[in-house]
Length: 609
Image 1 (cartoon, helix red, strand yellow):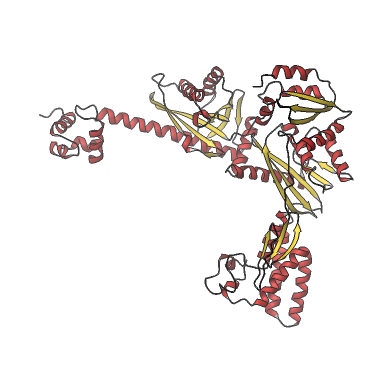
Image 2 (cartoon, helix red, strand yellow):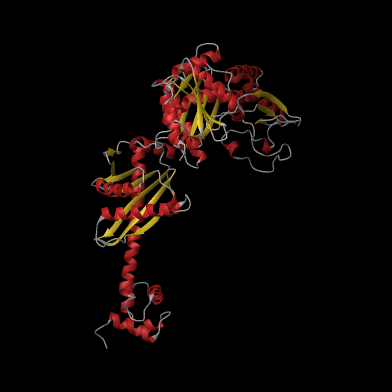
């Protein structure tokens, strides 16, 4: 907590209700954040109020603020321009800072008779031929991969002609994506022709390539070279098929950027799809610490188009933001003509924005070792429950007993949408005897968060979950809510309610039930979690009952401790077999003496001498 919070808030409340730029300094006087505001007093005072609604990045920034200054402007648009200029000049650590570190890419044609096509980031003096440079590495990589597939060029590590006939063709040959020169049956003349055709395809695009190939096919047919004409015909079909796949969603020929983001509360990923002539020619991903959600999109656009000189006429953004009109004006000034900055709601553009957002989620999920499907269901859970951040770390609890005996509880953990079995925990209810699920749940959660306050690290019980789920309804939630209030725990808390068929029906909280049956992915996710915690808790309960039976039937016998009891069970398999064994059989068992065998025999045959 910043010790100067009160002083800074008092200063912020004295600011004018005018547009301007505010500049945050740390103790050393270094500028750590620059922002703009429509009304300085309202915006700056938010930083020094309650910290509960701030992202972690904003809280860290506020903790480091020692002082701030401000500059009044005539309009919010002027504040935007000044903010952009100052950030470019000072590069504050808590602003979104993007670097234009994209290098140039080249198409490489290997030296020698059997040269390969590949994409590289640097030219070398190795005798190969290089075509380029190209700004978009994504385009070069995709185009070379397409060309190799269409014209059936090898992409393996074999060397020609050294490796002719040394091994069988690989899978690419059998799925008709390689002509297999490794067999030694491909003529050098035909291979060179395919390489030349692939280069024509890369230089001229699919439409020009089809025209050239068609002319070559007709020429071969006229010369009665029917096999060559058939091969070229197949290549034309492959080019057209690949071209159809590349039409994405756009029907109109547009040059535009599509921008969307995905945030898990701790990190945010912005994805940019760049279209030229209706075809995706480049894509970029940027991942950084999440900040103020209201200004994040605006700040990203400002930073991104500061490092980009080629601003398209059309820009589609998935999420709206307050300063969109000023941003549209700023982009138009940068481009030198009008820019259509839109937030599509329906149709093709909305589909593209959704696809872009899914790719942002995928990029963020991959960084954390998850999948986009797992992240998507967590995002759906976040929206359904009204959570402030993505519930990456979820704890779920269930109680198990039999008529109040062997009262136990199980805790399962899901991290990034997957079970984290190393974090599962078992609890034996110690506070009372008998059956009381509400009191049992309260005891378990009390003990869990007592361990949180004792922990020295943020691992295991030392980590606060993003969400706590209970197998039960309002009664369990109310009992645990009292624990949370008493222990000052602010973690979101909900119960999982089942229907008559023991299936997850709804999620319940302090404000009533939230139906999940209509959300298939979320319903499946919560059902699996509820089944998992039930399985884990009841498994522990069965283990406890077995031990109780074991203790009461064998260890109650004089001279029989746990070691001998286990040896007897291992030898005879069941207690029933032990009860039917005669004295000689018992005495012959491992770890048994005559006195111990006699004690066991008399225990199961009390009426016999």
